Image (cartoon, rainbow, N blue to C red):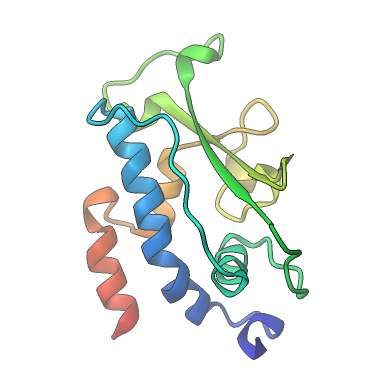
Length: 147
């Protein structure tokens, strides 16, 4: 809790990185049509979500309410007018993040400056925040964080 209150983000990055990798990997698999899954559910304790919130820039210093839920939505750009498909499949998707049903994408630190259509963020931003090397470097970056 001390690290959360003092906005010490190193532990939160280490704690939340594996979950972010899982979420991003599943989104990549969906965007590349390597899975038929349309919905994935994770369950976590408040301490895990607090770390996740701190990492995303959403933590406000208080314990999260009981039953807090976070949704990461993957949207194909075909949904949006005036956007063309790209050969890099990840660029063909956008994400929207909701907390307890309210859109918070505009508050997420890696999406704030990248918003499109008020509440959507390019999906590639999620993998960029996990590793400068992109999706293939996410696990290696985590090893680096732990050293």
